[in-house]
Image (tube, rainbow over all chains, first blue to last red; front, side, top):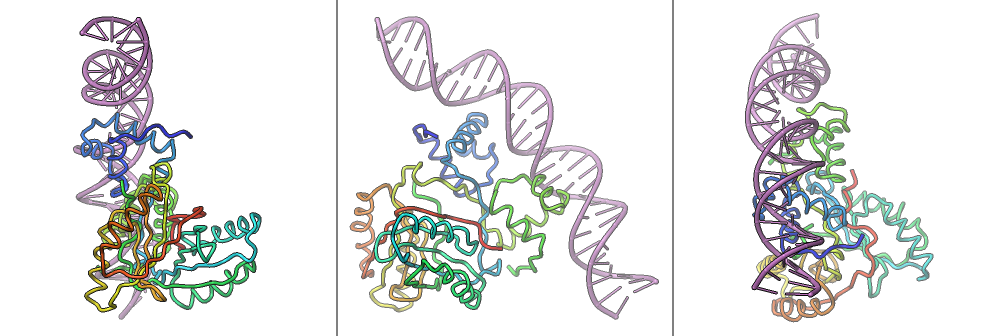
Length: 155
Length: 155
DNA sequence: TCCGTTTTTGGCATGTTCTGCCAATCTTGA
DNA sequence: TCAAGATTGGCAGAACATGCCAAAAACGGA
């Protein structure tokens, strides 16, 4: 899907919808000084082009009973294309893994893992992660305090 | 805000709204086998209690012209309460920083930073990060491929 | 600069959804 | 079993979404 030039109006739309994803079209149109119909058309276009990939409710982890966020770096045992893809797919399939990136540097993958507590984390590591035996050198860092999270992109 | 017990129906609501944050109340009610009014009441309650912290459009970074995601770990020069708070606030105020956590381990903070390209990243490091001179030992890892991102929480 | 083409916009009409209220139903504990 | 509280479903009026058409604006070539 080729993306048409994103102009200043589109950027305003993206800014507002990143802050408040459930704005009504009427309200959004008002904020960007446009009438509802062209505003809606722009939003639909951004959605169709995939610039807007979707909408999500942001859920408070603690209040939802998910008290532990961990950042896990790990290496794949053999860095060939096949194994990287297999590991990627296996990691992405785990619901506890809320983000997974291939990264430069000492490790191959950096994960953000969300679970209830330390005990669940231990279970996850020992029963799910280690059993992916293409994985080596697992290092965990725990979030002690989350200062900023899921913030809008700079635009 | 004390959070009432989140029951199975609430969890269904959270699951659906994490996947599709702009579901209409009618459609959501239909999916969880409830009529619209009690469904809306539950959603409002989850919002008021802060279980749902808000709604966001998920924007494609590449398509929005933000081609570089970096994970930055850093240490504060003196780990006292004052300095940690000052650094936290300064980091959180930067729009390029889309996530910032205090973490256990060798570093004090782990950041996710989103910028246009390597050049912008260099500018950000040299002009914005280093000039916070309470910051030491900056280590950057770049996302080569994003396998999974902003996924719903496991519930 | 002028004119024709293309793109974008604004307004309108219709169908859908939201939202607050009330009565009915279900749940709970004694 | 019964009563009190919590939760649900339905209804009505207001707000919103959405597709269509004409008007306005932006653009490009001569």
